[in-house]
Image (cartoon, rainbow, N blue to C red):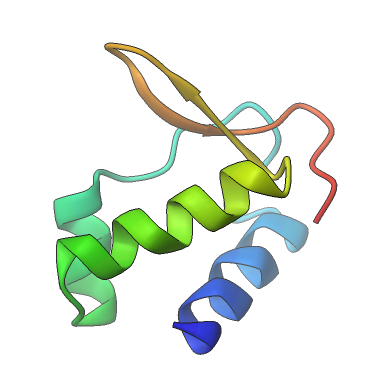
Length: 69
Protein backbone atom coordinates (compact mmCIF):
# COMPACT_ATOMS: atom_id res chain seq x y z
CA UNK A 1 0.00 0.00 0.00
CA UNK A 2 2.99 2.32 0.45
CA UNK A 3 3.51 2.49 -3.31
CA UNK A 4 -0.15 3.41 -3.78
CA UNK A 5 0.08 6.15 -1.16
CA UNK A 6 3.31 7.48 -2.67
CA UNK A 7 1.81 7.57 -6.16
CA UNK A 8 -1.38 9.31 -5.04
CA UNK A 9 0.68 11.91 -3.14
CA UNK A 10 2.91 12.41 -6.18
CA UNK A 11 -0.15 13.01 -8.38
CA UNK A 12 -1.53 15.50 -5.89
CA UNK A 13 1.79 17.36 -5.68
CA UNK A 14 2.33 17.46 -9.45
CA UNK A 15 -1.18 18.74 -10.12
CA UNK A 16 -2.74 15.66 -11.64
CA UNK A 17 -5.23 15.98 -8.77
CA UNK A 18 -5.08 19.68 -7.85
CA UNK A 19 -6.51 21.13 -4.63
CA UNK A 20 -10.30 20.95 -4.63
CA UNK A 21 -10.47 18.29 -7.33
CA UNK A 22 -12.41 15.09 -6.93
CA UNK A 23 -10.56 11.79 -6.93
CA UNK A 24 -11.81 9.05 -9.24
CA UNK A 25 -14.13 6.54 -7.61
CA UNK A 26 -12.72 3.73 -5.51
CA UNK A 27 -13.63 1.29 -8.26
CA UNK A 28 -11.78 3.34 -10.87
CA UNK A 29 -8.70 3.66 -8.67
CA UNK A 30 -8.78 -0.06 -7.90
CA UNK A 31 -8.77 -0.78 -11.63
CA UNK A 32 -5.95 1.69 -12.33
CA UNK A 33 -3.73 0.36 -9.53
CA UNK A 34 -4.86 -3.27 -9.89
CA UNK A 35 -5.67 -3.57 -6.19
CA UNK A 36 -8.83 -4.31 -4.24
CA UNK A 37 -11.29 -1.59 -3.34
CA UNK A 38 -10.55 -2.25 0.33
CA UNK A 39 -6.90 -1.36 -0.31
CA UNK A 40 -8.03 1.88 -1.96
CA UNK A 41 -10.32 2.56 0.99
CA UNK A 42 -7.45 2.12 3.44
CA UNK A 43 -5.20 4.40 1.40
CA UNK A 44 -7.88 7.08 1.15
CA UNK A 45 -8.54 6.81 4.90
CA UNK A 46 -4.83 7.28 5.59
CA UNK A 47 -4.66 10.37 3.38
CA UNK A 48 -7.81 11.76 5.01
CA UNK A 49 -6.22 11.30 8.44
CA UNK A 50 -3.17 13.20 7.17
CA UNK A 51 -5.35 16.06 5.95
CA UNK A 52 -4.50 15.49 2.29
CA UNK A 53 -8.01 14.39 1.28
CA UNK A 54 -11.47 15.32 2.51
CA UNK A 55 -14.68 13.39 2.18
CA UNK A 56 -17.89 15.09 1.18
CA UNK A 57 -20.85 12.86 2.02
CA UNK A 58 -22.85 12.00 -1.06
CA UNK A 59 -20.29 13.64 -3.35
CA UNK A 60 -17.01 11.77 -3.01
CA UNK A 61 -13.43 12.32 -1.95
CA UNK A 62 -11.60 15.52 -2.80
CA UNK A 63 -8.08 16.88 -2.50
CA UNK A 64 -7.96 19.30 0.41
CA UNK A 65 -7.74 22.96 -0.56
CA UNK A 66 -4.42 23.14 1.31
CA UNK A 67 -3.14 19.56 1.32
CA UNK A 68 -0.67 18.86 4.10
CA UNK A 69 0.97 15.97 2.27
